[in-house]
Image 1 (cartoon, helix red, strand yellow):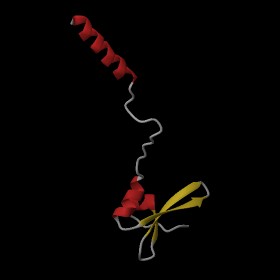
Image 2 (spheres, rainbow, N blue to C red):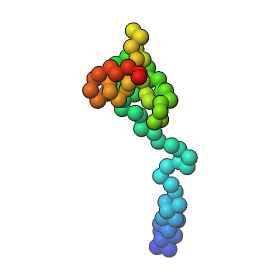
Image 3 (cartoon, rainbow, N blue to C red):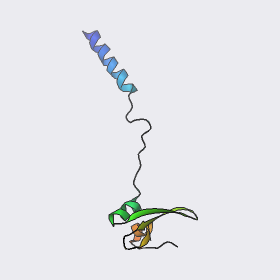
Image 4 (cartoon, helix red, strand yellow):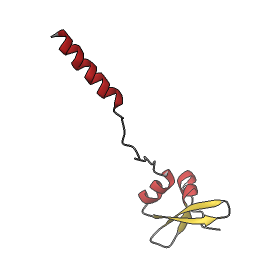
Length: 81
């Protein structure tokens, strides 16, 4: 009886030790807070290529286009240069 219990416990430990917490190949991404802010204000995100890389803009239905991070940080609509 004791041998069976020890064997069962060893089997559980062996299986538990080889399992993984997450699935292989699953990527977790965090939302860009400036893009989330744009959507909350009713806009849609637009990514454009700039001199130093890509820049996110928030386009509103009234035609305004604002740089997302300026809108997020300072609540200012800074149009594209």
